[in-house]
Length: 280
Length: 142
Image 1 (cartoon, rainbow over the protein chains, first blue to last red):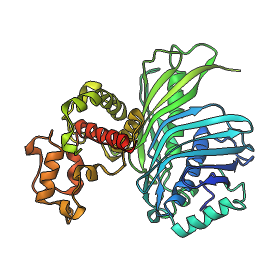
Image 2 (cartoon, rainbow over the protein chains, first blue to last red):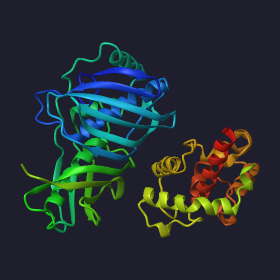
Image 3 (cartoon, each protein chain N blue to C red):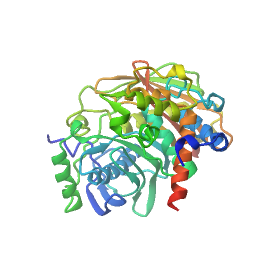
Image 4 (spheres, rainbow over the protein chains, first blue to last red):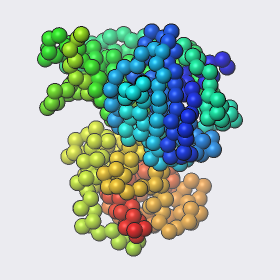
């Protein structure tokens, strides 16, 4: 169980909490990591909200990825940085938790999550309620030792067909075995939605980079991700068909519609807005 | 005021916002959102879509709609035991359901009706009624 509360856990300490209403926390990004993608920053914010929600329902339920209606990307996080996490709970009961949140690095805002909702499922299906309750007390007290996260292996993604600058397909093979499955979750391993979104953002940026209207000397950079909706769990070893389609927009940003399918069933949908940024 | 007293004018007033909200949540054309279309069978909505629609409607109308309580709302003042037994809607419950979902053609109500299949009956009009009920509750609470 060495990976439990380590291999995919992104809250080191809860520094302040008003039960069921708001919380603040910290996560030290290990300096030895090669990078720390924005999706994991979003995961850290979501995990802080999950701790507040689980405590609010006395660890009967835990939220799982459901809806993230808007995520605003403000900047990157460098390994070695300490993330300041904050969440505001809009509502929380045995059905769902609705929340907003943000992460900062130093004085800089790096990500905002707005209008997020996680359906609550029986916690015992995923983890030990007692272990979670004990962990919550540790996080609220002295905190967990930092540096537990060793990174995640990049999933195998094979680029498929598409129309240059308009659409792009790919196949993502979810690993059958990975350390993070012991943490997400011990009793029911699930491929984290944020890792799927990270792969989808990568696919979208590949597509955007090939668009003929991308200004010379620029590269596409994520601005906002909206309409994220997770329709079902993704199990270890599943094969996902990813699709990215450019959609018309009226402003200076581009829009890409994203979907992932498993066994001909849509498992997730999202939209990514990007903007051309001059390459330094 | 009971749910049966929701008027056509009230439904007409909220429907445009509800239709736009549902189209955005479901990723379909606005024209696909008819008052009487089955959300599950006609628009492929799943349980996460119901949560999404309720979540968005709460924000659009600035009301609280208890999540997961749509069936309870349809049940009205009936007790759970009066409404269902062993997962099946009772005769009295079915009469209540037909009255609440008055926009649904009679042939769409199966006998027996399983409680878990009730959402298959839901249409945009069902959500209009939810919103109107929530608006009334908010107004009553001051």
